[in-house]
Length: 168
Image (cartoon, rainbow, N blue to C red; front, side):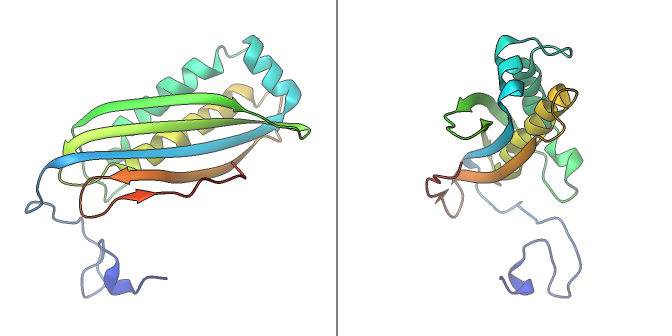
């Protein structure tokens, strides 16, 4: 675990503060995140057939994810407001030999800014997954969001690319 002095949102005295990015250079910032939902196969069938009473889960979840990325600074207190240029949310059904079905939600967020867009990408998939749950909860209360993770970050001081995961 990191030493508390390494946490950027804490002063040397341990007080919270918003990181000053004023002296940073504007660069292209890109982040991708994913969420994975697990549900009954019958639920997946209703989603594919677009027979849910609340409507098309794919479309509503995508819109919710895009809106969430744009609202991240309002939701996460120490997050900077960023000039987001692109948000893309994709949802795909995963191959599953098990008795449960899985859907993978992936977001991509890009901006020209002084700080990264990781939180925007993570917020997009989180809210899209919760929206998917809301759309389907009447027929499957056992659905689970089994993963939310950052899968790529580019721009700024360091880049990050997650290892492929056979579990997702």
